[in-house]
Length: 127
Ligand code: HEM
Ligand code: HEM
Image (tube, rainbow, N blue to C red):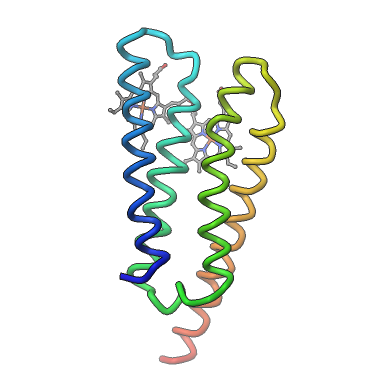
């Protein structure tokens, strides 16, 4: 398995464990105020990063480009910023971190579209 896929497959389950533990804490406490924090930890951290890991596992050649490395770096940075950012925004402690995180998450997805499109283009021309 290439380095990018490995990074994705190591970090995604960690985000899942943290997100699920937070979900269990919400259920146990009955306090669901921060449910979007839990939702986005699971959906951006576990689901999205695992999908990137899947792509870079089945398309290892795509993982070789500098653009793909930046894509995964931004995806990780986005999760790390947006999750506490959402908590701060809900608690009225400022929206700056959530805004920064959301733009970085979006940039990461834009790069992913570019990485996938250029790979599909090359695969199609090779057939
Ligand atoms: C141990 C596993 C989990 C537990 C105990 C758990 C628990 C919860 C609880 C208590 C809520 C709040 C429900 C409400 O207020 O109506 C919630 C919301 C949510 N959960 Fe989970 N969850 C778990 C796993 C997951 C996973 C794996 C995902 C996604 C892949 C997920 C996605 C969501 C989403 C999207 C919401 C709604 C967030 C929002 O209100 O914006 N959960 N969960
Ligand atoms: C730039 C990235 C994203 C931003 C800024 C964002 C923002 C938001 C906001 C502001 C809400 C409403 C929260 C509330 O009601 O308090 C929300 C809810 C939600 N988001 Fe996201 N989101 C992002 C990415 C995603 C992704 C990638 C997924 C799924 C893979 C997702 C799934 C959901 C779900 C399931 C809900 C709950 C909807 C509901 O309760 O009806 N989000 N999101």
